[in-house]
Image (cartoon, rainbow, N blue to C red):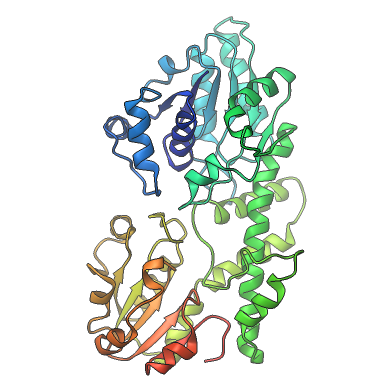
Length: 439
């Protein structure tokens, strides 16, 4: 089979590379000339564990190619994945201009039957718009080429995307014809041999499944953060509560760790988009509106603890931040809580010294040099008045507390991810402030 993946962002690059890894010929297309030049040299524009080596391996085997020409690449393709961005508009709706633009170009250049698959996260009804757009372009060419449009949402976790793709919990595919199902089943056959389930359904249901999944996970996070805040007020320990409810099989122990809010490219955007989809159709998603509100509030919780401890006066003080990306094992800074915390500290007259194993170049691209970037986590502590743990990188899980106490002007840790045990930290003579625990 020959497949084309349009868009070499996070989803598109992982998708194309992993299909090549199982022996399928793949061409990844992007309009960014420099990015394609770099990819052809094996230079990957994002950080994702294992991705760079897989790209280089499959380029060398001739299974993975990169091109700026969709017009040339689409010819003879069995499947074309649309994996371009769908950024949120000001009203929270998904902006489909890039998806529709790709559909137009496909219709202008395809020369044989193929299945056009929306891989981007898109609202219900997008596949229909893609189909109408391609039909319109084919009519302009006076061609009667048949095609199908399918939906194949991704369920990739940043930092574990390769495993998620190659060893999926499930593969969801929305189709509207037996022929499209046959093509997609053949495409995913290498994955099915290992027993990974593929679930076929209608296209609108597949489009909705992605939003519903992310919104459910976001709901669990915001719910637990709300519980954590209440625990502090009533004198309970959220870590004990988490263990108590996580052992219930109906609830499970995933996505119930309290913290300072979710970020990234998926949860914030998808929750907003689903709320907007409902509003357009005359329905209010009251639970998701609350989920979003709780998450925005939660991003300020660590700063509020900081302000309380320093009696509202941060002027002239310096604060170390460990972790900048929205989660570990990625350099993704989209909707990262660190950006909110940094902004609030600076506006309060404080200074920031930050360290992140991967995300400092991306942070510098976003905020510039208004903060200081440290070469090591311990360098960030030098002459700092307190430490804020913002991202739970494994690098930070077993630090030298004695060294930390010496380096900090004030031995204080604000743990936004509850990665430390309060009693252990206190044993070293360090003040500890966590989320949802008594201080």
